[in-house]
Image 1 (spheres, one colour):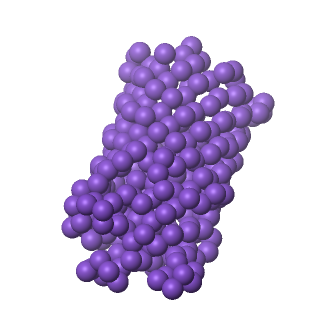
Image 2: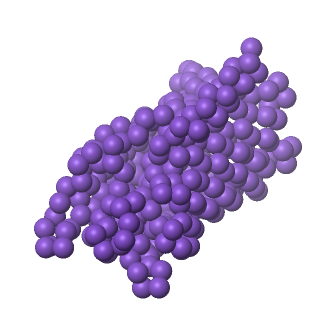
Length: 300
């Protein structure tokens, strides 16, 4: 029965990949995931990942990250992650290191079948979102960072095979110095994002984990609801701040993760994601028609 369910779900994802319009993840979608599946005998892990994606106006992406997680005891753990991204499209190719994520996770005393945990942290940008090619400004779609210091927080609940997460991402300090004007670019594919300012996000995610009898293989279909709390803004050529109509609202993403767990405690995962519902306007450059990635985690 579970195999039939996975086949139907996979076909559903393939269908949506053909008609997808965009994804949104400024970091909030992955918060807390590094703390899952701890091996009690191994308190350290290093994770490497590569992600491919398709964006607006035929922009192709290759992203990567490396993360380190330390479990101090049964209650406390911490994670550090550094991201990078390479974008290639009609403007050319441009890549750079993106952001650092520093998060801590707390698990209170577990009672019964319900396991709660709480995660909080910071996103720290490595650039001001003003990468250029031959000194020509690039839209946000080519940037490796949003250029904001963000607060990240989530409440997580595990019940049997179910995981639920409620999270918030709040830009606290904006150092975005993007200088892209659509009027001077020769194309209408991308919006003006001069001195771009982005609003917060909230997320609700549900994940169901299916393990094989020997627990070597796992399958994790999950659904993410991301709500963008307000209209983003930019500064026009006259120095006036303008709201970007339609940039607020709901995004619904679907994700399917398949994993294999080695006897050594290491694991490898492959994932595919696509959006089912998108915001009317997405000036932040996070639009993805689809993403596909692979990650490898070493525990020691």
